[in-house]
Length: 339
Image (cartoon, rainbow, N blue to C red):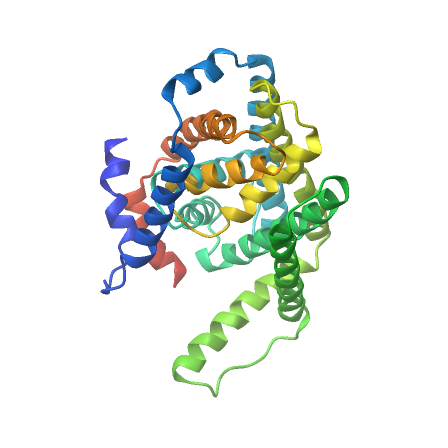
């Protein structure tokens, strides 16, 4: 553990430092602190103890099981997307995902995405750049189902206009992203022999990505992974709602889904490690829409964060340890693999 935390600065720091290098992580920490200050204002530790003492651990156990199942679904989906590049078991894919999630828990800026891509590249002997299109497709699938989820939830429970506006923006992004993937997946290969300089680099990069997208997008597994992405979101929503039940919040499943969607949209941008601060803030905001008192919502935001993050942290640490590598080694080799 000491080796992992000791290499945090090295993994964050790029080879060439700039005066603005600190800006993005600093902004994430500022937002996290601001969110925590607002959430914890007037909240007493005794209220948290009272909530924990009355937890129904039967609901909590089901919630943890659903949360783990969601990442197994993600591992299966990633295995399908990677099949044109090489064979990878669902267990291995899930291990890489958990190792990446563990990295996100201790480092800002979602650096775990690089970690899981590096691990899969190492296990399958597939070039690092060839892994990226599958991860782009994952994000597009997640955004698509998230937008659909907001629309369906809006039919069942009243949602704020700001959330619906965010869903509309997300829908536009999905449409543009789908159009881009279709373009790169269906267009014929082109020659860039006459290009040079920066344009040569960009053209080669786009050609490489489009080649992998063509191979991936024309397979049956691509469609299956899109459909399977729904189960990932369903299991995460169930996990969140089951913790609500375990905490004694008598809200229906649609309310639980609505709050989770608010949290997912609010934490979509890179911020502090483990989304600390923003996770609690958007959980409280979401629950307030359903008449939950801020004090109760604050207690729940802390409990659900710990209950769903602790298994992730433990399993992620075990996944990283079992991989036989470290964040320092990944930092040293990831640039070579990306070439």
